[in-house]
Amino acid sequence: MVLRSTYWLALSYFTYFYSYGIFLPFWGIWLKGEGISSESIGLLLGAGLVARFLGTLIISPAIKDPAYLVTGLRILALLTLVFSVGYWFGNGWAWLMINIAGFSLFFGPLVPLTDALAGMLQRQIAMDYGKVRVWGSIAFVIGSAVTGKLVSVYGHNAILYSLTAGVVAMLLGMLLQPSVKPIAQDRQARGPVTPWRVLLAEPAVWRFLLCVTLMMGAHAAYYGFSAIYWQDAGYSAATVGYLWSLGVVAEIVVFTFSQRLFRRWSARNMLLLSAVCGIVRWVMMGEFIALPWLLVIQLLHCGSFTVCHLAGMRFIASRPREQVIRLQAIYSALAMGGGIAVMTMVSGYLFATLHGGLFWVMALVALPALFLRPQVTPAQN
Image (cartoon, rainbow, N blue to C red):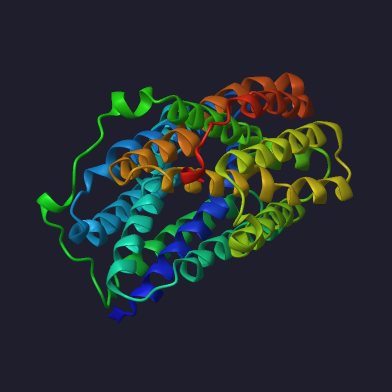
């Protein structure tokens, strides 16, 4: 069956982020339901993030010819499904470690490669990327809200059922044929590649990477333990799902109006706003547990995460063209994978003793970002 390319991309984003909206907020709850301790949950989730980091850094750049992007996405979706099914066959420590590492290794590169496909198709057909990509954020809201309700009714096993169904839907959607496929690129047209040592030696680049890695890494406690923390405080799984959904709704609003909101902002000033929002958010999360405060905390997600990501994209877009691909890869690997992986492992040990105090630690992690923001020239803004 042939599907219009914009619909194919929208379906890919939708099914991926629907699955991610199940995995990210609720996998810690599933592991806890299987009898795993908080320290072990931190190690398992951290190992998954390390695998995600490696997959993004190694697998994503390995597909150099755009003509193979669709095939690559299908193979990765199939391998993700294999490890999703693997969770059904045991809950031993070693088995869970193998499955979460394999699942994350192949699940992680799907978005950067889908983004690469979207970028290629934008050059071939008239396509509004924002209107396609927004379906991913919408799906995340639906996935987290629906799963929260299902867990309230059917228990923690509903998380595994929902995740498997989401990954099956993702694979089936990717097996459809997009009406327009990316055109193969001549090797000579790819241009020179900036060596890693040259790229990372530049002060603006390493300061940027360290800044965003700290700010995104400070989300580790939220991603791994907020659902458990809120449930321990007496909130139902459905309420937890709605709270997560609220954060993504705020994200959708800022993404939608980002051009109007930040047209005149530099990447450096956007990073300042994001760091302040993050520090305030994590301090509030460590201090308050009443629902009105949680609503404010979740609305701040649009500052702690969304503005940071927009600033990252603006900084990367300001760089010379030959640096963009590599900088995008290392940004995704470090900020979205490596930093969160390390802090998730740390959070697993700290949560057992600090509980809500863990979020104060996250505020301290984000604090140095205020001073690490890279200097950019007016031409780079």
